[in-house]
Length: 243
Image 1 (cartoon, rainbow, N blue to C red):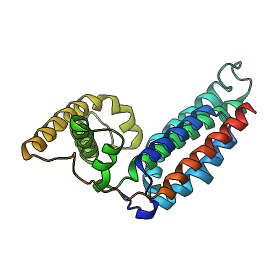
Image 2 (cartoon, one colour; image 1 turned 180 degrees about the vertical axis):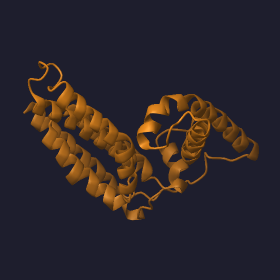
Image 3 (cartoon, one colour; image 1 turned 45 degrees about the horizontal axis):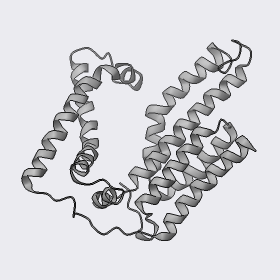
Image 4 (cartoon, rainbow, N blue to C red; image 1 turned 180 degrees about the horizontal axis):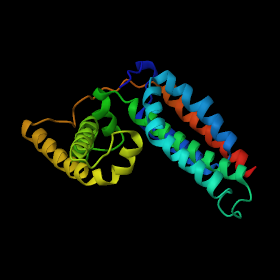
C-alpha cells in the first residue's frame, strides 16, 4: 500500500463524496475525447502522485485490455456500427463506441482504486468507523479486506491444481480468463469459510476494532481539493452533455 503524507490525507467522507461524483460523471458522458482527457490528464497524474499507478496498469492489462480487444473486434469489425445503427454502416463509430466503454471501465476502476488503495492499513478501522460502519459490520469489512492477498494466493492454488489435473492446457492469460467461471465456486466457498474463521478468531482474542486506530491525520485542504476536482469533472461532463 502506498504511504501518503499526512498533510495530503483527505477525510473519509470527502473521499466517498469525491469517488461518487467522479463515478457519476464518468457514467453520464459518452464523449470519447472528454473521457480521454479525464483519464490521461486527470486520473493518471493523481495515481502517479499517490503511487497507485502500478496497480492501475495491472488492472488494465489483466482485465480491461482483453475486454477492449473484444469490443473493438465486435463493434469495429464484426458489427461495424454502434448499437442502434445498421450493421456495417459505420465502422469508425463502432470503434468509437468500443473506446467509450473501455475508457469508462478504466476511469471507474481507477477511481475505485484511488478511493480504496490510498487508505493506510493502520487507518482502516478508524476510516470505516468515520463513515458509520461499526460493530459486527466493521469486523466483517475488515475481515473481507484482509482476504484480498489470500484470495490471490488461493486463486493461484486453484489454477495450479487444475493445470496439474490437465483441465488447463496452459497458464496464459487467455486460458485463465476462459476458465475463470469454473474457479468461482471453490474460491467463493473458501472466502466464506475463511471470513467466518477469521471473525471467530478475532472474537476469541477479544480484539476491539471500535477503539483501534482512533487518530486520523486529516488535512482539510486535501479534503476540499479532492471534492473540488471531482466537481470540476462532473461540471465538465454536464456542460458538454447538456449545454
